[in-house]
Length: 402
Image 1 (cartoon, rainbow, N blue to C red):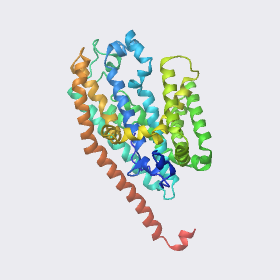
Image 2: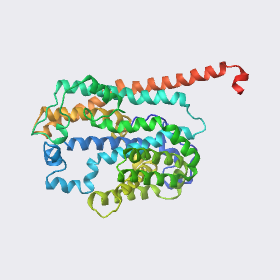
Image 3: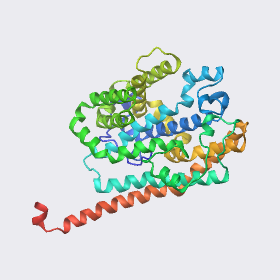
Image 4: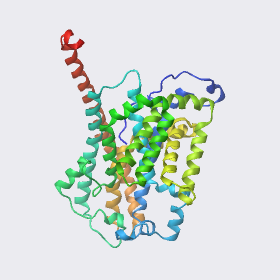
């Protein structure tokens, strides 16, 4: 989620596709970013919000007890098991985040001018942790203002937030790696983002060694993740998802070149839509997690090269969502839960109040915390790189040669 590294395309010369009215490689990025992937990130964050909004309705999510989970009304189940599932595909959206993170973080290390590891680690950790701390403080404030008390009028999901604020719990939640979920459930995914960030050198090494086999590498990561799901091994399930994006970064140039000659954007989008529709609507597909990951990967490829996705991502709303997706992801849950508790038994009115608040808070959080933390992280990263560089040049030439 917390991505700000530039996604510059190499070789942005115009191609013959421009004469056919198709987007050339240079038109797929602006200001150093893949426009489509920014848009996809924003759409995925919005789907997570929709998912949590649905979880405050008993008819949709079930009753007040954990045993009521998935006990929705028949009409709700009909929607949930149809292509309209896309409106609340929060889990699938997080998988897309993981693939995007793998792509975004590995790509700069595959260019001629690569970042230094000395600069990368403090930059990356500050970039993630400062907004996390801010979100945890926001959760603490909302819990003080609107106490989390379980009620038979609420769903099991709202009641899962039952409890008070404790200093140890807040610290544990902010550290992420020690376990999360009680205060702000979305933080579970940040554990894997941080682990991946710390393990990035291994991913970069793997891609440098096997990058020319990027398509096979992508397939291998999909198989590993599906195996992890089957074996109930979270590390094997989630960490290879970042590897999918890493190998897509290795094959980025080939994907873009191929997109100029073949309609792979159309094919990827159509393939993702067909697979997801079948997964959500029927039980026909074997190995559902395997096909789900194939669909998520195809979706990322489609948003790299598919003209309608690029046009959609240039729109004002999707562009805003793309740049503020991390803030929206971090702040929405405490607002949705708080308004549900303020208006028990009336979730529709709670959402009417929640949406303006969470959109306003997203903008405030972005302007006053996320964006400043990104700038600070960039300065710290550059400072660390410069410090090491100056120390290296200050060494005697005989020592540098060694």
